Amino acid sequence: MQHRKLNPSNSPFACSKTYSLKKGLSIRFSFDAASKQISCDWSTEVPMGKKLREIWPAYLAARDDFFTGLDVSVLVLDL
Image (cartoon, rainbow, N blue to C red; front, side):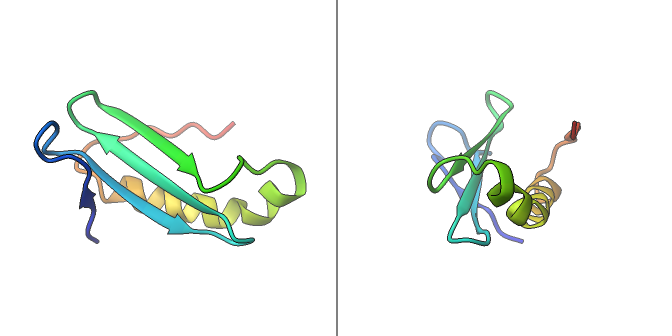
């Protein structure tokens, strides 16, 4: 798995990856090693209700794939 560098001059270990989900949605996960922050950005609005339930398995697969590619430990709490 390859992750694209976000800004090598300011944060050499930053990476991001965009995943296409169902229903025309995509999500971009980013990790900045300098600040130790993980963020995600949706292509449109954050899905809710039925739309969220429909894409949930694809979201989980994308999230897990991104976290697996990081060279850090990540704790995920799904409530």
